[in-house]
Length: 302
Image (cartoon, rainbow, N blue to C red; front, side, top):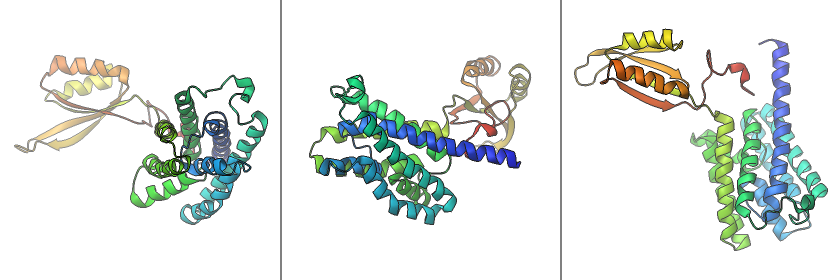
């Protein structure tokens, strides 16, 4: 990779961190903080503490709680990740506090009351969750974190070998329970769980991609005809995998191929027409990189 390409990738990563911090600030100030939704993270803890000590802003609580977690991040994941995380952890609360000063924290007066969702908390949960998941995904894509309990989630993921989204979900759920104890209200924690679920799914979408590609494993005695159809008619590539039946150990050729969803019915109809007894497994591909699909250069922070 040339120096120019490396510089371009580094700039792209920092832009994604800045954009993620901005989106996260909007999510909290516009859709989460005003309604006491507790979506986990240090800012979720900050919302609960702000309820107890309203003179201190949510972003300020978040920044104070981030300091020990940032030190942990640098020790576990290295100074490079720590520097990016430090940038995100500082920019997010600053933007959050600045935006709060600009628009206020009362949904009835915020932007003239045009997005007052006091009587539709579910909508606030959904929009807040989508924006929160988008922002977290953009930041995590650069191998950084937004600070807070997602650092704990990354540590849990690293040592317990769990998917990052599931680890963050576990940690954030614990913060929701803290909110339940303080608010003494079962309704808002339930709404908060909706926000956490939506944000986790959105984060998965950003990190893993929204590919509709299908991964096929095909076993057929007419594999040569299928091979010709894939190469010539569909203009796709594929791979032969050596296999053998478990019953009689007969050697067989299994075709491995990735196609788009719109091509699915086409290859199914062809296989049905030439070999109705063929065996085919269809698997959803989260993301497909390489010739004929998304290129590796389109990835951020790879």
